[in-house]
Image (tube, rainbow, N blue to C red; front, side):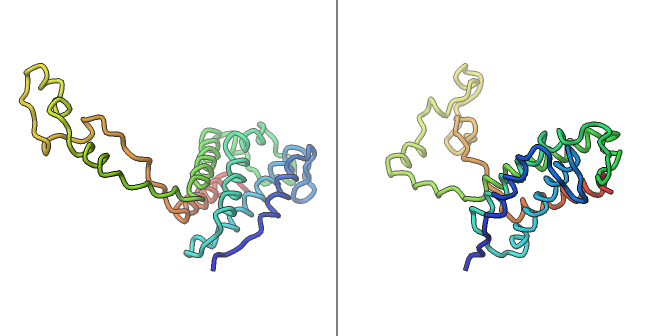
Length: 202
């Protein structure tokens, strides 16, 4: 049976982020409170996805919602919440963030990319329909002109046989890149968060 997790708390979390004066941990307000609330919601998404690490199924809509939340609170959306010197208590940020800004922003962008990738992996693409007999015949029978390289056309090299032709030289279009398993993407997300916390969080 597929594990069911209600997405209602996530929708509630989205509503909270729209509040101008966000109150975070320990009564934090303003930009500090807003980013602390965002970090708390990121942590919630990681917890909701945790079952995939042990091979347990999680509903695609839960994975998609988590992916949207991760993308929403990472990248520039995250770095914009760290104006230089915003270390008002009870922030957990360390001053190293601004001394190593490129590293910090790189981790934020990495998390954003992983959120997008997770969203793409939430619903596996439908398998492609097998080619019709006519399409299969056309794709496997190339004319002499199609097998000829520029050098062959100019008389600088002999015409190669079908077996000698690299399919990439005939203009063949590669299929879409393979989608990584959700568990693998989840592992990268947790490692990215852990790296950021170890370097930049008190």
